[in-house]
Image 1: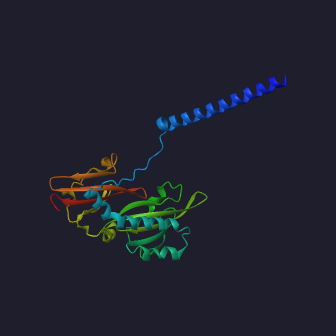
Image 2 (image 1 turned 60 degrees about the vertical axis):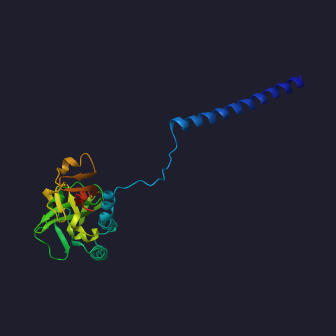
Image 3 (image 1 turned 45 degrees about the vertical axis):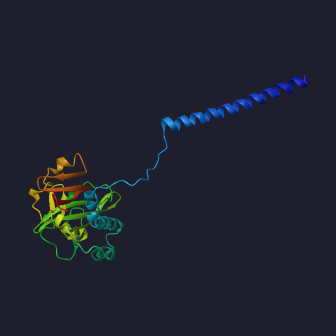
Length: 252
């Protein structure tokens, strides 16, 4: 009897071992199938992509300008208290291209300004209509006597209610020193021309219906009988800025 029990135990252990081996093999086969045919692991391609000469010029031209815009946006976001006069006034030394800084009520009333002179065109009552749900920075374009300005608006909220805005304005053309030679630079917004270098806007391939154009693409190479160029969109505080370069055909 004892002998029969021992034999049965040996058989059970042997079967268990076989079952374990079979399960392990099945798991490995299933895992191999899954990663081979269903969910292939990502593979990083370390080959260097070729960049066309015109794309390379576009990138190099606007790298410095875009860095300045990004730094200003981050600096505004870091000012947690609108009463921090030192942080606010230091913006002029960090960004010498800005023109005015304003403290605004939730209804756009100017509560204070640096410089203290408030231009007649500095009207901000339109911000009362903005739907602001976070401290996200907004950008607008305001027309003035000498052209156009971009205004960055940094909202301050308490318990979900707007308490004030910090507004910084600047002429986009004041950023041209950061692009090197601006003669072949195109700087636009969706419905506004800031700069087209030494060219007449209507004569360039950038004279497009931008609202329609930007529905389909954020980058393109353009040309006409005389010029060729490239452009790319930069989203900035809700604005669609357009960076472009242009040159005459055949120009080396």
